[in-house]
Image 1 (tube, one colour):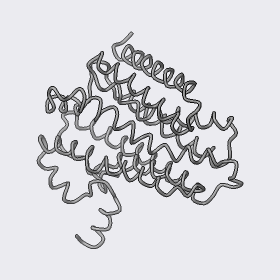
Image 2 (image 1 turned 120 degrees about the horizontal axis):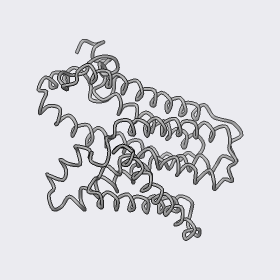
Image 3 (image 1 turned 135 degrees about the horizontal axis):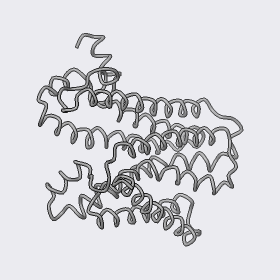
Length: 297
């Protein structure tokens, strides 16, 4: 058995326990609303994964949480509706599974094993010192992303809870499905282009400026954001819960002001030429890059 296989089995064991304890908690919160029930289960699962991260001194235990847990959250709401599906909820399930399988598979391919930890967590540990365990590891790496993703999953619960009054699949729900699929395809294409570039440049020299990367500095993140905006459109199609628009906005801001700048600071340390690329290509939205080129700026 390879080191990577052992690592994947350990992670599988951790998530089995996390999901199992989360599911068990539901039997003790039946007096609460559906949304609060699944939120509590989500928090419990996060604590379990955090425990494994501390035990193995590797915060990357949390990395697959982003794509593994949302389908289980969706499954909970499907279960609450006795597995009766409408056309809208079926499209929602297809979109969610397409996204989850793609992202989880990509993580499995790129993760090297228990000895490997995301460079961002290593930087955070060095910078925060003694404050890392609570502020960085628990708060920043585990708890905050759980809150953001759960918030973005809330439109799914709204969609399924009202499916009995959905006699048809609205144009907005179809638009949400289309945006979700386009977002995942955008991620697939951009990741493939990046993988090809790295294969042709094994020493990590140069900057990828071809394909989708010619219009966005982070097209893979752009695709991820598109997916969550699509999920919002599903939930907003019938419920009118306009406050849920804060969910994809929060996701967009997290990438724009936290995740992406962190990555770009690291790139600039070794590739100063990246600064010129920053001037020519928008940080996230290809539409803005195209517009600037059309007007000659």
